[in-house]
Length: 161
Image 1: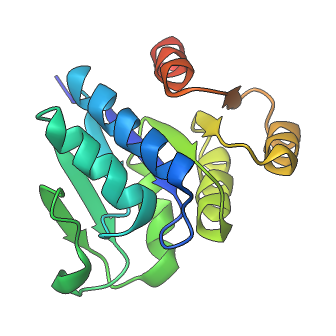
Image 2: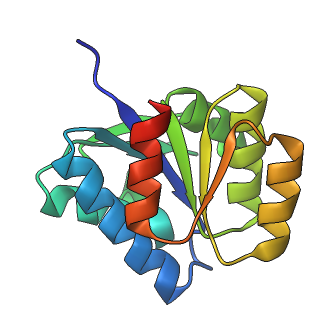
């Protein structure tokens, strides 16, 4: 049976403390559910926090990296996939995920959400950015789920799988 892959996307260097805490908790719970965590694989921001959370819960982590630089990989990534595709790797991130959780918001995250919606993937928004909630919900009301907490995000994953 194939494993369920949950993509957690979010800011790198510009992630807020709240985004990092949410990402860590998401990673922990994803691991405890027996799901696989997929991130952008770098050692910064939401990617790193979610991967560390998943590892703390003995989970499996995949990182799809934008380059071929081994120095920038999160130490909590089990399987590193080097694309040397820059931001184009965002499409691989979302298409490889069964569900995408956007933790926070930034330009890279916005591109991943848009690509996920184009790929007809369910997207869960865990962000305080009200404009983003309105914009993405308007683009795809049937595939965008807005949540306030990590627990709500996980409950929503269970309903859309």
